[in-house]
Amino acid sequence: MSTAKASAPESDIALRLGRSMETLSRARAEIGKVIYGQDEVVSRTLVTLLSGGHVLLIGVPGLAKTLLVETIATVLGLSSSRIQCTPDLMPADVLGSEVLEETERGQRSFRFIKGPVFAQFLMVDEINRASPRTQSALLQAMQEKQVSISGRQHDLPRPFHVLATQNPIEQEGTYPLPEAQLDRFLMQVDVDYPDADTERRIILATTTGEAQEARQVMDEATLLELQALVRDMPIGEQVVEAILTLVRRGRPGEGATDLVNEYVVWAPGPRGSQALMLACRAKALLEGRPAPSIDDVLDLAEPVLKHRMSLNYKARANGVTLRSVIGEMCEGI
Image 1 (cartoon, helix red, strand yellow):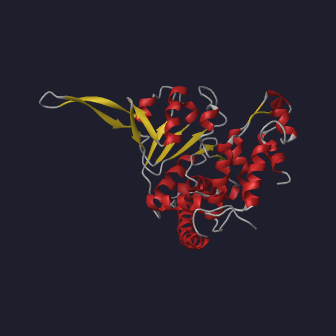
Image 2 (image 1 turned 180 degrees about the vertical axis):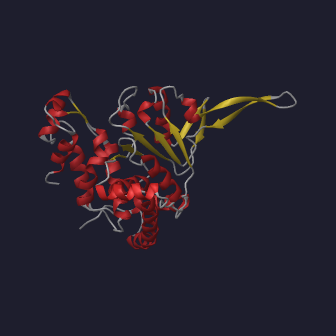
Image 3 (image 1 turned 45 degrees about the horizontal axis):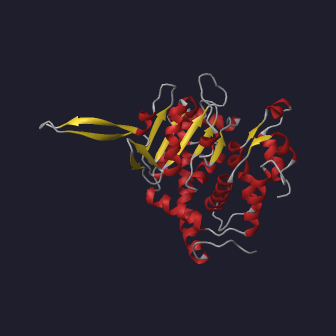
């Protein structure tokens, strides 16, 4: 099978892959000490971070979304901060602001006080409760890894990741995220209720003093090295074609599926293809494989593309969902 050009020799990739497997295995084990029964959520969150992207966690309250973010930050050894979004949250509360200071000699100068966005791991809780003005303050940070304050550019720390949460049920007093902001998230991860055995384990561990704490097993340099490895991994031409075919099927017009042509009003752009390419490579790395497969493309199609698509009112009236649309797009890949 031919492969697309890689930016590093395959022998070097294999050596780096072998070193990374043990590190990632230890990281997942530490996260598993605290987060029970959410293996898919943990895996997809780690895939997003290994890809260098941001993740949107969707789930009702009480499903350990906040705990997941705190645990991953601890295990990866990253500085973290949290923003609790409310309608009165202002952009300066996120980015920071300049204050006027006066010395003992009467000299005045402005000093920039950094906001919570200046962290390697930023949790934005209930992001859809922030006003559009505040939501837009995150756009530049998420895309360019820097912010503009009073005409001056301030670089954010590396790595920089936003993990935002959103409640899919309660919509009163919320501001739906615009398409431009949704597209900044590499993946949307849905957090479901745990099964009975997992919930039994949760209530016993958290109410009897048996809960464990995760330990740090990585640091920022290790994560940056893993992110570089993801981009250096070879990828088969068949996988590249599968990604292109899948994403382009989601755009109304020639080559699109029937459901797409009838119901889709907003389709994924090239950033969706880029995200799927990186996510497939990161998933292979997380599972200790030297290259991604078409199965990775099909498995990640929904979380990578779902928030990059929108359906019309006719779809809602006929009970058509994005899951069914993406399912049809994946047929025959």
